[in-house]
Length: 206
Image (cartoon, rainbow, N blue to C red; front, side):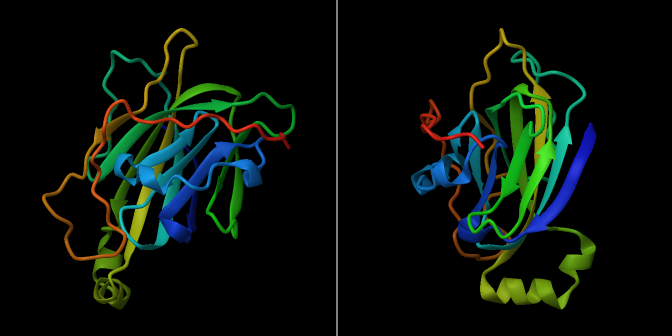
């Protein structure tokens, strides 16, 4: 695995956007909260992922897998993530701007991550923040008493062959019997297959 970048943001409305850098954010689909039970919404050029709870701080790491994607091979997941989904992702060719934009709904942080154009399988994994520094802090106690979370997520890109389509799929469904404490905005994953991909909106490219 090759780590591309790490960042931290406030995922307002419990959402994280990852989209083809040539798309205009203002024309993306922003009204798909009915897809909470599958953990994501969007189309191959723009995906929106949902946090587990009412998240006040989301740590995001973006990775490139060194191996390509294959439907016949099992995707290796991190041991401590709570949920994981795989979706198709497409990046348009551009001499100056090929890559992925990462942002939240308010766009108070926007990051262009350079990435080669092409077709990918994108794996999204997420967990509650569980490092000792946080769990032993007063900040954690304040989050618990307020019903808030801090979370960590991982976006891993696997290069996909043109001959092999990537079907959206839930790879890990809430790996606990119940959350460790009560927090707001928690919607358990309950995917109904086939998972829904939105139609790509008609919008200008930047």
